[in-house]
Amino acid sequence: MLKMKKISTLLCAGALALSLGACSSDGASGTDKKKESTGYPKKAISVVAPSGAGGGWDLTARSFTKVLSETKLVEVPMTVENKPGGGGAVFMAEYATQQKSNNDMLFVNSPPIIINNLKKEGNSPYGYKNTTPLAQLTKDYGAIVVKADSKFKDLKSVLEEVKKNPRKLTFAGGSAPGSMDHLVAILPAFKYGVDPTKVKYVSYDGGGEAITALLGGNADVIGTDASSVQEFLKAGKVRVLAITASERLEGEFKDIPTAKEQGVDAEFTIWRGVFGPEKMSDEAKSYWEKTIGKLVETPEWKKEVETQGWEMEYKNSEEFKKFLDEQETQVRQLLEALGMQK
Image 1 (cartoon, helix red, strand yellow):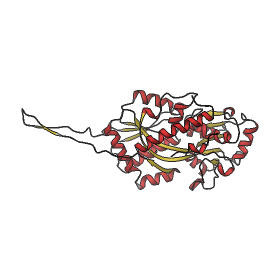
Image 2: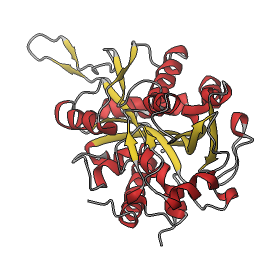
Image 3: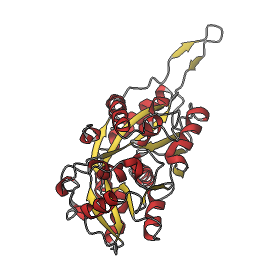
Image 4: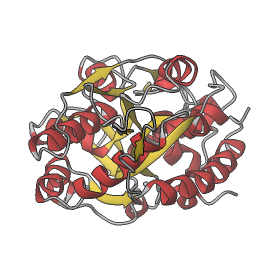
C-alpha cells in the first residue's frame, strides 16, 4: 500500500544579471547607438488565483502582491484576478494556449497543477510543464472541518459513520473530484479502510465556497487547507477535527490534533508557489528570480506568512522545477492507489 506521507511536500531564486546595452559606432555619421534593455516590467502585473475568493490560492496571490508593493520590490502596479473553474483547469487551458508568452501575467498554484493533469476524471491536458515555475513560497496542511455545532467531535467519529455507510455524509471541497481538496477529504477514510470511490464528495470553486456550503448546511464535512479556515475557527464558526501535518501546528491550531495522533496515518502537505508562462523571456524570469529571492527575506513577508497561518518553505526556480518532477511521480502513485489515475 502506498505510503501517503510520501506526498508530503517539500517550492525560486537564482539570479542572472541583465545586459543593458552595447554601443556601436555608425561609420557614416559617427553617432553612437545604444541597444537598450526592455526594462521589464513596464506594465502592470496581474497575478491570477485560479479560483474564487477566500481560498488558499486567493490568499496567497493577495499576500504576494501586497508585500511586493508595500516593500517597493515591484514598482509597477500589481493586481489579483480570480479566474475560477474546474479547480484551476479552466484557467490552465487559457494560460497554456493564449498567454504562453505573457510576461505580465503570473499565477499561483499548489498540488492541483500536478493532480489535475494526472487524474482520470475531468483531467487537464496542461500542467506545470506548460509553465515556467518561479518559486515555492510556503507550505500548508490539509484540515478536516465540520460546523461548530456538528455532532462530530473528533476524526474517528466521522470515519466510523462513513465506514457504516459511505454515502450518508456529504464531503465537500474547493476543487474537482480527484483534485487536492478531494484527496485531503477522503485520505483519512481511505487510510481507515473505506473505499474512497464510495464516499460522497461535492466540489466547489475554491475553499471559500466550500466553507460557505458547510456553514449553510449543504455539506457535513469539508477537506481544505488549514489556513483557509483559520479565521472561521477563531470566530467559533467551525470545528477542525484533524490536521494532516506530522505534528501539531502552532497559533490558532495548537489545540487541534493531527490525524496521526488519532490513529489515522493521513499526512498531506500543501505547497504553494508562483508560476510564469511557458515562453517567459529570460529577462522576465531573471527579474522574478531575483525579486522573489529578496521578498522571502523581508520581515514584512515573514510576518505575512505567520499571520496567514502558513509556514515558510522557499525554493528557487531550479529547485522548484526539480521538486515538481519528483512530485509528479509521487502524485501518480497516489492516484493509482485510489484508482483515479488517467
